[in-house]
Image (cartoon, rainbow, N blue to C red; front, side):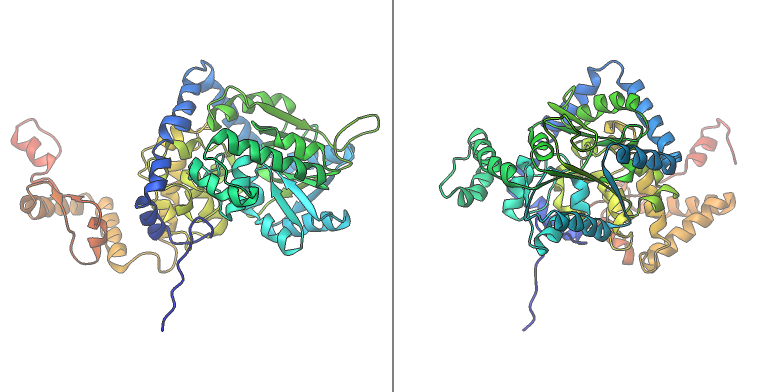
Length: 481
């Protein structure tokens, strides 16, 4: 008897975009949660930028800083390393996720650590840090409320800044009640109060705090962390060791660059003018200081970024992980984050996941976009996401086995026609006098043979019954022949 194992998309990474999307579209609870995304986070993002007169100039400036920084990234990383070391910190360079996890495990083993508190960090999700810690017998405790909920539930984040956005209060009550040992009410305030009380004990007993970073300033070695809950301050201030794991693209050269990003990140993430807490941490506690960790370690992660740096999709490294493109995307607002399969979801995830995890394995993601441009319009640094998705689609045609024979033939014929005016005229003449006069409704509901996949869920526009050039000549207004 054949046994089938269904993928749990909320818990497992996968490469089943179509099946996961279909499941998401029929999930009434998920659809109810996602229906609020546009009127909440999406609306706040657009209103925040609209109410900020200098936003256009500031976004251009942030983009220019990112571009210039990446052009000399090696120099800025050297400056950063020297700055951190001069203030008593230690810098570790990690080639990939496994390397980063091993570096962190070495730090924890040396410190004889059994429990760590963590702040929300997509970079730690990217390297799969929690499973590595648990395999080594170390207990990781997520301290961001959303991350704590999905950790207890055994799920994955479904949004970059709102990891539990797919859950309603009633779901959260179901998840946290067994931990509480009593039935918790489906009330957001009551649930947050329970988590706050629970996490206080973790802060007080953890030996190490692990965070990501929104930015790292090269000239001072300062790690910059933005948050609204206060958990990052406790994660970095109470344990005796602080480990920050950061992608190398998060470096900015000067402290003077920071205000530019602080103003756009909060607006892009939650629609706030500024996050409630902004922490600037420069090294470990120094003599005479009353608080702060005894040790500070900065783990700088490559994991494919230097390869991207020299390629046509370099602009993806501009991303500041605000999630604004997710809130604006009509695809994400219908299927949520788990359908994308990788760590990063939404429009920027459709670019990043193929770059980090392989294009062939994630061949559906570049097509998970209507190319409407809403993501680029919402992005605080104006990343040309639609253009990058088109580049990935073009690259797909060079992946072995990713194009069907009929599709490949169709593209070759189209490319040949576009290079020859004579063939283009002949092809359009044939199309208008055959399909254009058969499908008078202007839409084809079913394409023949191997092309019918296009029309499974949408119609295909039929050719017009007459070419424009024919109409132009008939009307006697002249034009090219």
